[in-house]
Length: 263
Image (cartoon, rainbow, N blue to C red):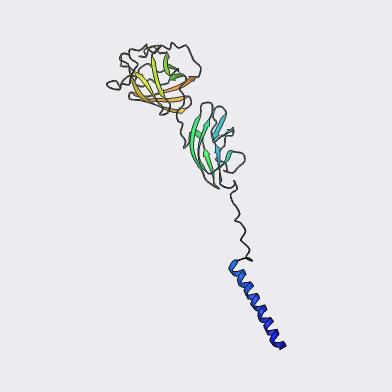
């Protein structure tokens, strides 16, 4: 009788152990979860980094504008620095697309940069490498640095203010008289301007739609049907200006027919 009771107790104990083990295996109550994966991004979760440098001196203080940040750069490198050096101007940013503007006294350059997680990108802005200048305001006095198709007009000065560009100095023999309205209707969004052209005798002016290509803040090319004419900004201040936009025989509309020789 006693042996039978012992056998029953042992069987009940074994059954309980088996039920407990089965319960643990099926429900996982005793299984320890794996530790969370370690974040290996040294820039922070979801972030990347941009580092800026140049290998030539640039006139004036250099400011780097990215997102809502303005950074200042004064270092000229002999060669490209390591991307993660703490001596170069850099910024850690959330992954995404950014427009970057780098500006000096006359230097301008824009970049469209994609910041990627865990990645550091070097931007060499020397000579605006792989960037673009864009379009900038025309206000100020501009010096024509080439005759182009127009004889004796190197040295012409055009002062742009109040949406018109008036001739404030004309070299001897140049077909554009003083107070001529050389430029008007500058459109910033597509960087175009109406540029007056004259025939070989200085008459019959017509306005031609021309592209304005900036090389820097103070250097541009007027690119129109009559040719490409370079100008340099020599002043941001206003000089004597008549503001008489009716000095030329014709100053309305856009005409490009039959007049390709004078600018």
